[in-house]
Image (tube, rainbow, N blue to C red):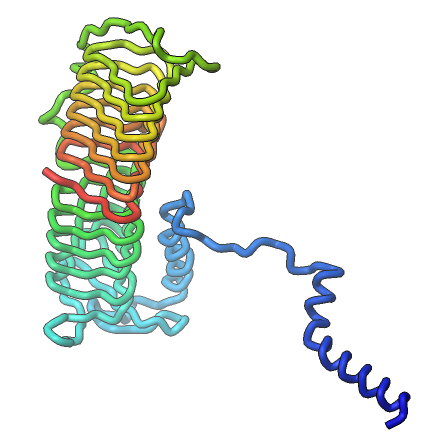
Length: 358
């Protein structure tokens, strides 16, 4: 074999080897696909993102459909081919029975003041043009209601639920994914959730418990933080555990490397941060945030002005309030427990388990 033939063969081999890399080399030299992908993560701040997208999809489809000849509960097709059924009042839904389950494989468009039947599994979305009342023991893929929504006992939401009006979830309801309301979210004891948000989130009624006025009636005395290290921005730091006596007044932010105990009736005009457990006695007021690497326990009738964050678990006692409608706050931990009478203005995120208890 001559040297010329060898060199030609080598050149062809090298060219053949680099041929699949030409698009990558062109992109490396002159990038064109440089914009970030539009990915909506679980942590997106817009909890109603999916509900709003569903509305934007459905309303144009409804506008194109002629409902004049359609009877209630009569199956039909939207212009894009999606099967749907319209119901009004207390109409029955067309369903198929599969292994003792009544399964509805239609997108449901519910008229105002509609009550859905019990023991149904709805495989597609539900859209309520006004107020809507669900049945007992139902499973829903997703729900969007333009008015008030009532989820009755032992209902399950698989993906998301959003109401423009109030949203009431009765005992045994399981809220997977996102649950939100533009007005108020009322949860009975025995509800489990992952991510909930509303201007006011309440567990049963807070009327049985103390209010901010009763907390403010406590007479508090300033304490000396001389043993702590004074830092910038009115922050005080100490190594190890630290305890604030009951009915004390602290002006400043506290940072401790151990556990932090706030005595009953104490008032902290600042933020709290601890590397270990944070425990608040009954009737405490914290004007700022609470951040802990370990468990956070909030006693009864406490007022928390800012975010409440834990890397492990948060328990909020009876009658406590977190955030305000003017200044919403976030409660976030892998596990969150909210007792009866608790109100949260803002958002609660529980990645592993969120629950309401009596």
